[in-house]
Structure formats: structure tokens, C-alpha cells
Amino acid sequence: MTERGTLYLVVGPSGAGKDTLIAGAKERLRHLDNWVFPARVIDRPVVPDAEVHEPVTRAEFDRRRATGELFLVWEAHGSRYGLPRSMEDDLAQGRNVVVNVSRAVVARARQRFQPCRVIVVTAPAAILAARLAQRGRETGGEIRERLERRGEPLADGPDVRVVINDGSVADGVHRFLTALEAE
Image 1 (cartoon, rainbow, N blue to C red):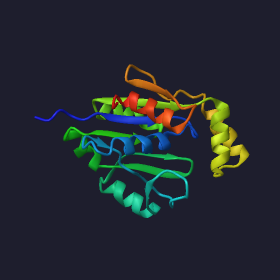
Image 2: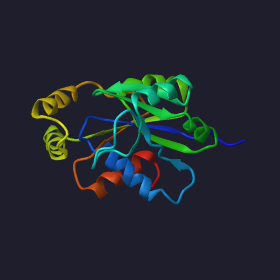
Image 3: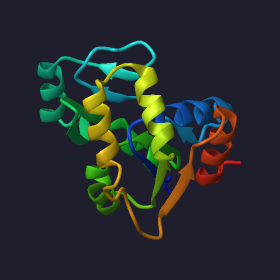
Image 4: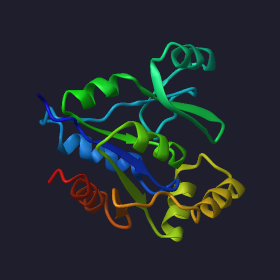
């Protein structure tokens, strides 16, 4: 019998570099069949230089949710996010699944999927502010709101690993892979 894969939930404040580190890990682990990095389904169009996702309309999102094609669904910043149900098959077949999620779904995921690990990606406030300003998707007020939210707890417990992403992309990816125990 195949040992169940681990679900890795990646959380952290906006601007921490979660998607960049996930993309770097995906590239480094592409030759291994036991690592899966599914795209989130989001009810908004693709934006240049933003996270890779499957864009759908609100109606399509609602349809997929109603038919059970999505699970661990949440709303944030005016958009709906969901993860494809196919992840359950990957986990059952022994593959490790790495996904960027909202802190709001961590407790639900921990109850439903084991083994489960949480990786908190963060950076000092000044770096977060600079990254948010550089991507140009938020106003100054929206950036301040996101930074104020940074003080809220992201996750705690023995299954949590913290990655401080305050250097180069290569350094961040290395730290992230170490947290995944993939190096």
C-alpha cells in the first residue's frame, strides 16, 4: 500500500514572496514525480507578474464548488479562491502537494488531511512594503491595510515551519526547499 503524501499549506503576508518561492521549488523539483504544485482556481483574470492561477468567472467558480470540483474554498481581497479536488487523488497516491492558501483554511485542512504541514513565508515589514509597492496592484492605503494585517497570527503548532524570505530569490527558494524537506 502506498504511503499517503503530505499536504503543505503555504501561508504568509502579501509581499512575502510565497508564489515566487513555490515557483522556484516547482522548478527545482520538476524531475520528481512525488511533488505536485496545483494551480489555484480564482474568479479573476490573470494579471501580468501575478501568481499563476486558473481564471474562471464567478458563475463557473460557483458551479465547480456546487459540483464538488473544488475544496478548501475561501474569499480574500474581493476574490474567491479554491483548490482542485484532484489534489485528494495526488495525496492518496503518495504525492506531496504544495499549495498557497489563506490562513482561514488552515484549521479545516489540518482536520481533513494528514499528514499536513504549514509553511509560513514572511519578511520584515519594510521588505513587504517595498514588494507590494513594486508590484503596483494596490494603493498606498491598501498596502498599509495589508501590512497591518501582518500582525495577525498566521499559524502555530508543531507542524509549522517558518521561512524568512529577506534575501535573494535563490536564498529564499533554498530555505523553502529545506522547509519542505526536499533538499
